[in-house]
Length: 124
Image (cartoon, rainbow, N blue to C red; front, side):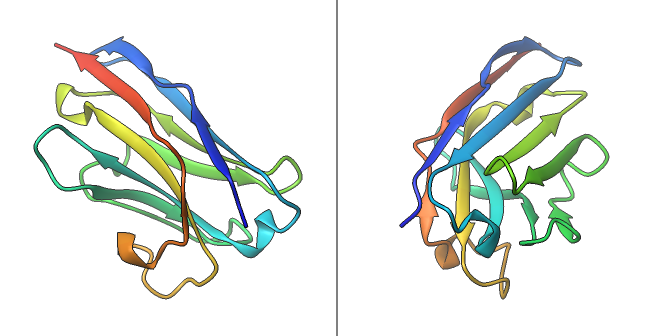
């Protein structure tokens, strides 16, 4: 069992930066691949970025490449999402998720555990 708690969301102007963090409970954090997804009002939840168990491999959606960076600290049981050059279209609730596998990181349905989400609002 893993419990995930996101933090770091807020209101920021376009072009600004935010850093989201996700704290995981349990002693097996390093066994899980981790990811960030987001859901804007009236839209489907979408993949943002994922990171392998060791942190060596990362993936990101085309819409955030070059602007967002996912990282993890297995000693601290945390995964982070550094978001730079934010745009109004990045406005959404951001969720972190954990998966014991690394088979389909883009697919939200493979993830075993989810956090409650944190709101990010980017004003123009």
